[in-house]
Image (cartoon, rainbow, N blue to C red; front, side):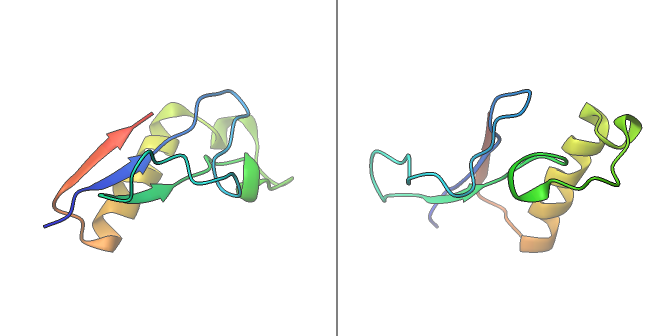
Length: 76
């Protein structure tokens, strides 16, 4: 079972989607994410209370659940 790395970029304001593949090898799956309000998730309707650590972490938990990941590492 291949491991999946869920990558969370630094911040504030950093993104990962659309950058060159940062993996040193292709021995694992990689999911690049952009947080609410950043990168591909820019939305002028978002308010500051929509972009909190709790909500961003909840987004990642939901992503993992929706993909049914069981062998993963969250890195960021």
